[in-house]
Each structure stands twice: as C-alpha cells, then as structure tokens.
Length: 220
Image (cartoon, rainbow, N blue to C red):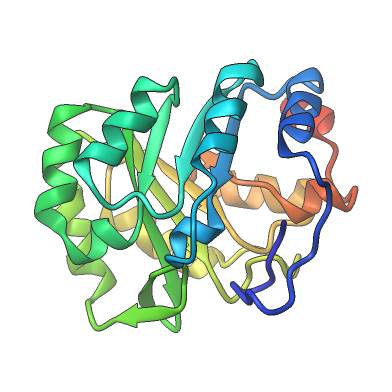
C-alpha cells in the first residue's frame, strides 16, 4: 500500500502479496528493503508476523519502520533478523529511549525525521511536534545510530521532485549517514539527492509506477 502525503484515506494498493514484491526486488538486484508497518505507525493494529515473514524469506537486508516505540520491540525485530530498526515517534518524543536503544544495538537503530511544514511529524504523520528540527537532529548526532531517514511528507508519493532545501539543511546539521525519501521520480532526482549529501534514497511509488527501474538505479 502506498500513501500520498501521508493520507490514509486514499491509499493506492500496488500488490496483495508484500513478500512476493520483496522477492521481486531482490531478483532485480536490491540488497536492502525499507518496510513500513503503516497500521502500527498510527496505532491501529500491526503487521509484525508478515514483516517477520519478509525478513526471513526475502533474501534482503530489511530495515523495519512503523510503530517501533519500545526497547523490547527493537530487540524482537532485530532478533527476528531485521538488519535495522527505524524509530520515529519514539525518537522525537522519547529521546532517552532512543539513546538506550542506540547504545544497546549500535548502528542497527535509525532515527526517522518526518518533516511537514518544517516540523517533525509523529504518530504515523497524523500529528506534529513543536520542536525545532535543528535541536532534534543535534540531540541525535552524538548517538551510535545507523543513520537518519529524512522524509519530506509534502513531497511523499507526489513524484514532484525531492525537497533539496530541507535535505541540504539537515545534511549540515549531522555527520550521521542520511537517507532521503519524498518526491523522487527520476534518475536525475537520484543524482541531485546524492549531490546534496544523502547516502541513500528510499524509493517507492517511482518504482511501482515504472518511473525508475531498479536495475538502472543500481548501475548509476
């Protein structure tokens, strides 16, 4: 399922079998998969069994996001075989928890910086927090995190181009590895994001709708 700008009321369903899609990505040469449990993110359920099935059977390094809000949940997902776990709401609202998780699992926990109207969004992007992005990223910068995933919510799923301004600002705030998501729709966009300092790009709609072929992205 794919959202546009985090709108849960109008999702697009691209496939009924997420494991099959993951295996197709692996066959195309993908090595890492970013999986988001949207139900867990907004607190309306969870898909952990399905995610663990993907982790065990997709022949990919899987980083799992969505509703990870406890040290126990981090440990469960990593023990199940996830290569990394992404904390969003917890990273913003409970920095001490993020710190404990990062020190318990060095380089296997990432912080999600989901930005809407220059504020950090939480709870599946349904709320925003009155915290300065610079203060938030500065707090994360000294932790043994696997990196930060920056998502421009206003660009997410729109394929209107990346938010290079926000990406550049966040890049200057931290020395951590930075992954970017939001609005990427072409090979040219990938080049721009890399030039702006991101070490990785999370692709979704552009792949599903044929704007970017995985084989071409890996060859770049």
